[in-house]
Length: 320
Image (tube, rainbow, N blue to C red; front, top):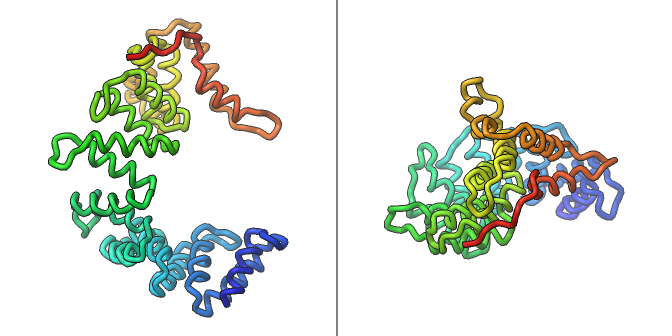
């Protein structure tokens, strides 16, 4: 039966054999029905994602539960995540915590991270518990789990708490930023902007906001627009500020509000200060930057180039 599971995955993915999703699902189903936990896990994911079958979240959750109850750590973690979101099952945060703990005892780092998030935010009937959240995030960080680095950094950067540690938060954000994590880049930029845990530096904040904005992170896009508008870390450039404000609003869907809400958006407020030439340049850049890539063009690389290059040429950023 384990061999059938492995062969089924090969057919499903086209590894070493011609791709045949139907044959792959059939073999994995046979293996799962024989009680092989890894096959049950695979079949659960197949139904959750609709990979080679019609998507069926309750059926996916049912197979994951079987694998979880057989003691498979990754299945326990995945099933716990379904219990948190109510995907294919009724929401049950208490039961999710139990499965997370069982997987964490086996060293599953995603389960540790899941416990950290559960205790940080709380979800009825599980109450928020900062101490427990920090404990589980730290365990996940010790195992090098990048999402936990950012989450722990956010908690330690909170001001005015006995366990606040902006220096450690900056270190954790730097780890995430070095791995290209946009949230970590944005949060580290905020620390540089305020001079918390790191020397104050508008130039460094501008650099990090740019890196996060280039990945499409809307919070960083708006912050970058503010940097351009106020000349922090760079020379003032209202056209570039307008472009980044508008990009942030587009990605976060804030450009779909009521007329009253739209009138208060940063892009609507700053556009009144622009010349017709600046508006035209920024609008053209925005249009080209949001053009979907096609096989016939290099639109994707062009869009990234345009996102990085200001619409109006300007001097290099100032340094502190």
